[in-house]
Length: 313
Image 1 (cartoon, one colour):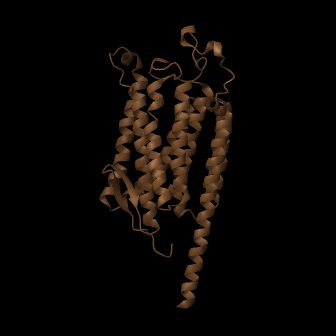
Image 2 (cartoon, rainbow, N blue to C red):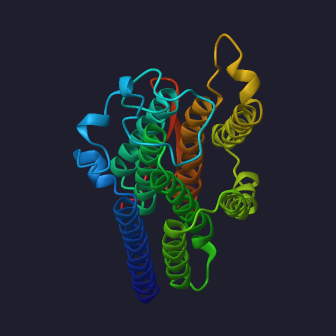
Image 3 (cartoon, rainbow, N blue to C red):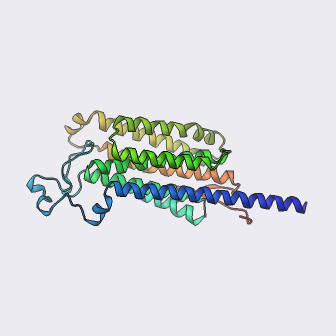
């Protein structure tokens, strides 16, 4: 019996070591990718005020020239530089703030309860994605649009890793493949303008996550945890409807007395969508690790996962 306990402890130790290795690879992927994106999109210059394309003589809207220069990216159904002479699409920019705040709540919970590092990286990825979206809508520049779209793909790769890695037999192959795939996409996307190809590619990555997420849902018995999955689907569908209406009926909407800002609503709903998805996945992972997870609510509204780890962990 003593020998069996020693073997069990040794297996647990090796499993923890493999988990740490996989999480470190995940952190490395996220950091390297976003550094690359920032460099490719010249975001350092924008954040530090070193934008060499914009001189002091063209920074005023009175001169008929936009602060960030000519628009080179896709525009949405919001008039440019109306609310601020420094922000191209004001509502589409500030609507990313809820995503950042919700991701911070999730990040604090993941760190405080010592969840696996993959979840901290996932919450940080949400924050970086929101910052990229803010930069894109604030500038309406092509490179900033790519700096928004590339983190979207990398975030989906993180979701694929979190969803499939627990049952992946050849565990070292998954982070390696995802790293190479994401790096290749970042390089190609920095040089090419995909358009509809990007949307199809992103939709396919989302579809890859759907079967596994549904499996987690049907094996979850907790009512509050199931509600998270339902809220995820609801926010996704409503947000997609807002996105489509803003895109397809822009000419009609611009004639209305009040613009409903469908794309900005999409940003807000996607912030909640990511938060619900992350919280649900944290619950499922805690179940796998036998951490006795429970869904609690911060301020009576924001759901989060409360766990009780065994003393040996």
